[in-house]
Image 1 (tube, rainbow, N blue to C red):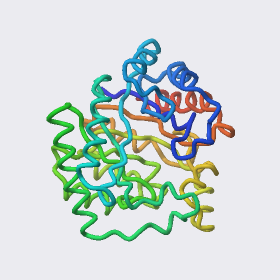
Image 2: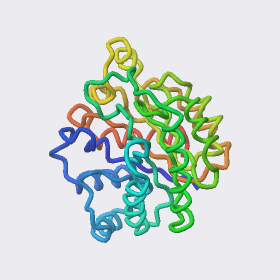
Image 3: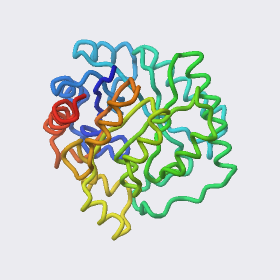
Image 4: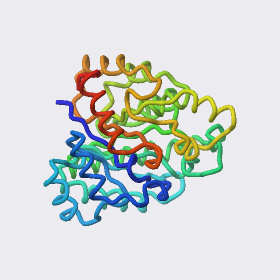
Amino acid sequence: MIQLGIAPIGWTNDDMPELGKDITFEQCVSEMALAGYKGCEVGNKYPKDPSVLKRHLDIRGLTICNQWFSYEFTSKPYEEVKKGFVELLNFLKHFDTKVVGGAECGNTIQGEYNTPVTQRKKVTNEDWKKLTTGLNELGKIALNDFGIQLSYHHHMGTMVQTIEETERLLNETQEEYVSLNYDCGHFDFSNEDPIEALKKFIGRTKHIHFKDVRQNIKEQVYKENISFLKAVKMGIYTVPGDGNLNMKPLADIIHNSSYEGWIVVEAEQDPANANPFEYAQKGYQFMTEILKF
């Protein structure tokens, strides 16, 4: 069964807290539920006590379908990364969550406000070894001890951004313990074909993010050497059906596959320019009426 979820990043942004700073957690989850979604990811304003959070979500018919984790294998000792990861798994088990996401952030530029997306940091084979070995180990803990699947998120500005890099990651990790969090918006932003990527990786995908891309802004970002965070503020991303991506073929690939799990509308925007509830509704309508999820 496929279920529809949404990320809180349209209401409040973890990397740029000034976006949506006046929007409360209660408004966020109430509007998610009102728009029709059954699950959500976790934002910086969510209560840290799982029993408190669960109470807020249960009365709205919501659950946690995934949470981001910054791995940082390339910049921190494995044991330190493992400690934070296990703490997160202990949090997620309260919601019967089946997926934990996130990306390697030890050498990323995604959070650097003035670093252009074209200036990613150099990556060594040692970095790759640290990442793939660490993911295998944490993926094993997640699955065997918690019944949660580690689903790695390829992401703009990180060491795993392109189809080729994603393929390398999957080839160098164990299929049982490391799956993919596919994101059409990030593949498109990195000038890859999201359709080709989904065809190639659907069998290894355990979690999906759907967002749309405004191509005029993408072109401006590359032309003017703009950073990832500035691109988000400019509105490079929007909800499915509101940008320029051809999303029907993506839906067809999923419908014709054995994929079961969540598809999450995840369109980080400035809520001052894109009313979160309005866009959440718009995305839900497109996902259900046009893409038939």
